[in-house]
Length: 85
Image 1 (cartoon, rainbow, N blue to C red):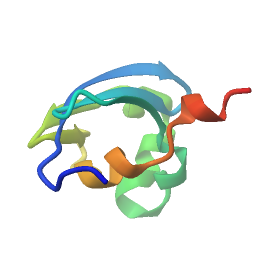
Image 2 (cartoon, one colour):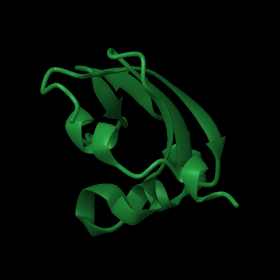
Image 3 (cartoon, rainbow, N blue to C red):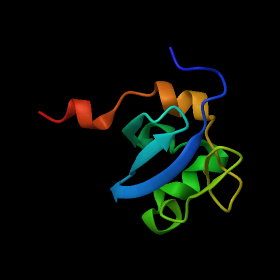
Image 4 (cartoon, rainbow, N blue to C red):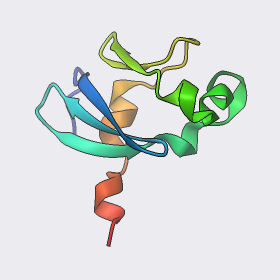
Protein backbone atom coordinates (compact mmCIF):
# COMPACT_ATOMS: atom_id res chain seq x y z
CA UNK A 1 0.00 0.00 0.00
CA UNK A 2 1.47 3.39 -0.98
CA UNK A 3 2.16 5.96 1.70
CA UNK A 4 -0.44 8.76 1.79
CA UNK A 5 2.15 11.43 0.96
CA UNK A 6 3.31 9.79 -2.28
CA UNK A 7 3.36 12.37 -5.05
CA UNK A 8 4.02 12.41 -8.79
CA UNK A 9 7.46 13.85 -9.56
CA UNK A 10 7.54 13.39 -13.34
CA UNK A 11 5.31 12.45 -16.25
CA UNK A 12 6.09 11.58 -19.85
CA UNK A 13 3.64 11.14 -22.70
CA UNK A 14 3.66 7.56 -24.07
CA UNK A 15 0.80 7.31 -26.57
CA UNK A 16 -2.96 7.74 -26.86
CA UNK A 17 -4.05 8.68 -23.31
CA UNK A 18 -1.19 7.06 -21.41
CA UNK A 19 1.50 8.72 -19.36
CA UNK A 20 4.59 7.20 -17.76
CA UNK A 21 4.67 8.47 -14.15
CA UNK A 22 7.37 8.48 -11.49
CA UNK A 23 6.45 8.91 -7.84
CA UNK A 24 8.31 10.14 -4.75
CA UNK A 25 8.65 6.52 -3.59
CA UNK A 26 10.65 5.79 -6.81
CA UNK A 27 7.85 3.64 -8.28
CA UNK A 28 7.31 4.10 -12.02
CA UNK A 29 4.22 3.03 -13.93
CA UNK A 30 2.33 3.70 -17.13
CA UNK A 31 -1.21 4.88 -16.50
CA UNK A 32 -4.01 4.89 -19.05
CA UNK A 33 -6.05 8.04 -18.37
CA UNK A 34 -8.83 7.19 -20.85
CA UNK A 35 -11.06 5.88 -18.04
CA UNK A 36 -11.27 9.40 -16.60
CA UNK A 37 -12.02 11.33 -19.81
CA UNK A 38 -15.70 11.99 -19.17
CA UNK A 39 -17.58 14.70 -17.34
CA UNK A 40 -17.41 18.46 -17.64
CA UNK A 41 -13.79 18.91 -16.53
CA UNK A 42 -12.19 15.88 -18.16
CA UNK A 43 -14.13 15.64 -21.45
CA UNK A 44 -11.99 18.35 -23.14
CA UNK A 45 -8.94 16.13 -22.57
CA UNK A 46 -10.38 13.58 -25.01
CA UNK A 47 -8.82 15.92 -27.59
CA UNK A 48 -5.25 14.56 -27.64
CA UNK A 49 -3.83 18.01 -28.27
CA UNK A 50 -5.36 19.13 -24.96
CA UNK A 51 -4.40 15.91 -23.17
CA UNK A 52 -0.74 16.41 -24.11
CA UNK A 53 -0.71 19.81 -22.37
CA UNK A 54 -0.34 18.13 -18.94
CA UNK A 55 2.11 19.39 -16.34
CA UNK A 56 3.08 18.52 -12.76
CA UNK A 57 1.83 20.78 -9.98
CA UNK A 58 1.01 20.12 -6.35
CA UNK A 59 2.46 16.63 -6.64
CA UNK A 60 0.15 15.38 -9.37
CA UNK A 61 -0.69 15.56 -13.07
CA UNK A 62 -2.71 18.66 -14.02
CA UNK A 63 -4.02 20.35 -17.14
CA UNK A 64 -4.53 24.05 -17.96
CA UNK A 65 -8.34 23.69 -17.77
CA UNK A 66 -8.08 22.84 -14.05
CA UNK A 67 -8.37 19.05 -14.37
CA UNK A 68 -6.19 16.93 -12.11
CA UNK A 69 -6.25 13.49 -10.55
CA UNK A 70 -5.22 12.77 -6.96
CA UNK A 71 -1.71 11.31 -6.79
CA UNK A 72 -2.98 8.50 -4.55
CA UNK A 73 -5.43 7.51 -7.27
CA UNK A 74 -2.66 7.48 -9.85
CA UNK A 75 -0.31 5.53 -7.58
CA UNK A 76 -2.88 2.78 -7.04
CA UNK A 77 -4.13 2.72 -10.66
CA UNK A 78 -3.44 -0.40 -12.67
CA UNK A 79 -0.15 -0.28 -14.56
CA UNK A 80 -0.96 -0.26 -18.28
CA UNK A 81 2.38 -1.97 -18.97
CA UNK A 82 1.25 -4.98 -16.94
CA UNK A 83 -1.68 -5.42 -19.34
CA UNK A 84 0.51 -5.73 -22.42
CA UNK A 85 0.85 -9.36 -23.35
